[in-house]
Image (cartoon, rainbow, N blue to C red; front, side, top):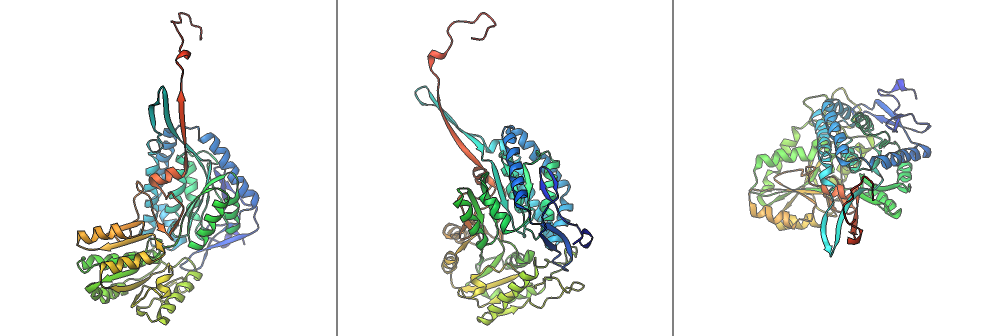
Length: 503
């Protein structure tokens, strides 16, 4: 296919600090999810190109690791400035390839910028520790040093934020990095890489390769790759984690989720309804922290009809429509899957208060549209409860007490995020203490932490030990060297040296 058939042409790889045309004969089409038009094509990188990307990252790392931390930080200061200057450009590009509305796309970029800002303080975050006289005339101290080449494998739903979770901190720590972004929306990550070079990052320290399972497996097996960061589905994440660890590499894999919001009868009703709508269908539900289960405690169940009315007011649309609450699903396959789960919910006996399967957006008849969908009477045995839907579908369950709600959440295999809406401090304390979920919101629907904390999914939502961004990411991307040293008194020169001779 010629470049003339696409809006952005055939994308190159990004190796050695510049665009690198691929020799591949296998290409993946990138489509606009609102109208199926071709935006671009990306190459499936050849084995030689994957090898070159890693080698360039490794060669750059050998020099970069010797650069003082304050100098590395200055690159990050430059980078965050450039990201802010190009914020709207990046958001527009992101909106086109993901289908997100412009406000959501801007949020995607901004949350990534916040992590880069955190990387600006890398000098203080990589300081070691020292103690004099750990034994008589013996001192001990630790150094924090980079690992080598790190790899990031990122999903389609946050093409700015999630790559920016990874490579800025890894590079600030002194590592080289190879990014394999989602082949469904690669335009934004490529632009991020270009701006990184413009900010002063050394050539080769960040490479971008495109492709699928073959390219991922090549990176996971490469002997120069020391650590792997992944965000995506539980199925793929399990493969990445097993393969990386089988090759004795560090791995952190952020995978599936089934996030619950618990609504107590004493909560602020208006806040509950407003926040449930945004958390349930925002970004078409394509967030790993989206609320897909609402658990109404006691008399709070009386609010479900009002929630249905609020859901009915929400309309999807194209990214540049200021009235659009959210955009299309990422692909026709995703639309088919979500609609299949809606049908399954009905077949299994859930009451569908709002059915989004027959959603039309004027002027865009072939977009991947699914309207807001709301179920009540859902039970834990139903597919719409057990499976991660990744669409604008909210399942409502009703329980008699906070203890029942906690038991429900803790019995679920996932532990990514959860929230409680209440006016009672005691209930809030009990919830945050007893819930077996890594990220907890109290009157906050989507508790994604700011980057001076870490993104801390638990249980079936995470494979690994150290989490993304914050202090844990710095530990993940570095190694600690402990030095014990002693100097003998007899080595001290005796008497003054009255000459200029070194002795």
